[in-house]
Amino acid sequence: MPMKAGKLRHEVVIQDASRSADAYGQQNPTWSTFSATYAKIENLKGNELLVAQQVNSKIDTKIKIRWVSGLRSNMRIQATHDSNTRYYNIVSINTVDEIEETIEIMCQRLEDITNG
Image (cartoon, rainbow, N blue to C red):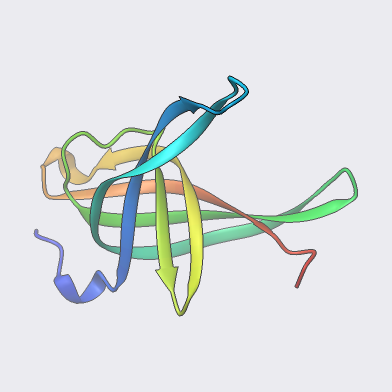
């Protein structure tokens, strides 16, 4: 069953990392656009981690998109809504019903909540 367009209300950019050297020879990740599409973003659960006296919120998220070829787990997803940009690290990728129509992406969003 094809995914209904009305459920895909978040505009997202799937980004691919490459490495480039800076002036000191350090290898830094450079993110480029792999694909821009619409998605359904659903936060599954959240928990807080206390690491080195800094509180972080770790949010498990499920993102559904229409099928796109070449998606890999070392990519990330950027979503912007109401001038807020969020980044999601891809954990796993599942082609729903093994048909090239819908992809379900399990992600984690790390957000610093100490600054409000």
